Length: 166
Image 1 (cartoon, rainbow, N blue to C red):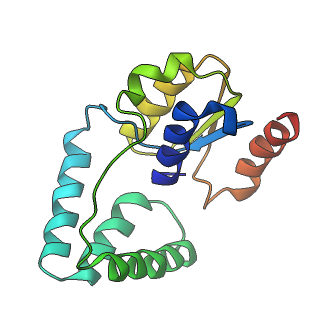
Image 2 (cartoon, rainbow, N blue to C red):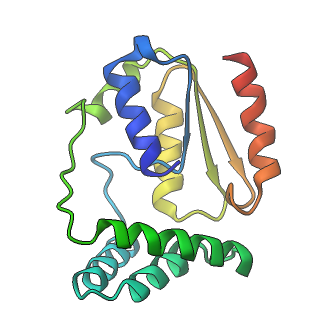
């Protein structure tokens, strides 16, 4: 899911011999033209982290990603996101992929792939999921009513049969 999906997609593209099947849930994609909404979120998060206000950065994330999630889920993610920021502070992250032309190589993927998104996801991730579904040859495409956090049974109902086949 999310950036973990990007890592998995990158690995699969560079070493398909090591992958039996691929599941992508709300994964970003290099080269995507991000919306103003997403760019505004990213700038606000970066500013809050840069100012050392990890509580604000955490709330920005919870409010952006979990608009309709119930409070218990928001609280769990709030705790996880705050911890992630704590671990990242002071660490220079270098973004690198194994596959330089990842987005251009999607059509050459030859592994069973399942792409899942949520009907309430921000438009960017629905667009990416649609693009992946159209571009990856052996791709199955599914949308659940909420997110995997909000609808774990619906997510599992799509995921389990795919995993059983691959």
